[in-house]
Image (tube, rainbow, N blue to C red; front, top):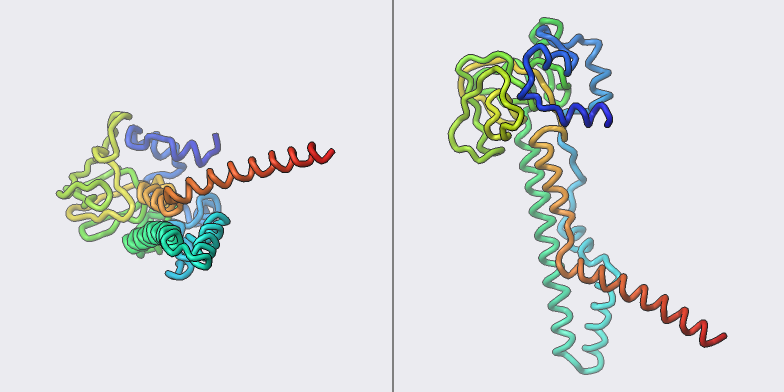
Length: 268
């Protein structure tokens, strides 16, 4: 297991404060400035991965880019030419419906990803070498100590080590309608994400109080990042017709190879 995989699988909410600092390689005074470039190189920028935005035409063309879709379009055209308008209309309707469903699914996924990007905090206050520093949120790294107060948006997933009447709005992440009270101290390992009251999550907002928290996850390694990854995967899922066409294409390909082999043997 790589170092990144070990870090991602660690139950940060179940660690004592000393063990937390030891595992993340930090301390109460935060990281040193000389350590930041190394961690940025190791973990990358604290941003959600984004794909180049697709135009409506590009999305539609992507749905039509399949050999068997071309075959169906050709079949519809031939049916129309030889005087079978009903057959042509049915085939064209199936292709159109498949294209609309696939394009709508991909478009909704793109819009959801854009909404997640807009939730990210633009900057954050961190403790580095014991000094309070304002940094761009994309330069936060694991081990940074976040300084949070009312009105702040949390810049990364972090474990709370000190808090005073701290509450956070996690409705966008967990669906909880009321702000959640946050308290320092370790929890049982099997506590679910929504009940981890010693954890703060990227892009949630502090509604009251103040506190300090150690960053344990950035970018796509955050709870929000994992949601973004799932949204991207959903956008790439094939429609039912595409899945059936893919299976049909495999069957036709194997059948064609078998027939070619048979014809070859008969020729011999």
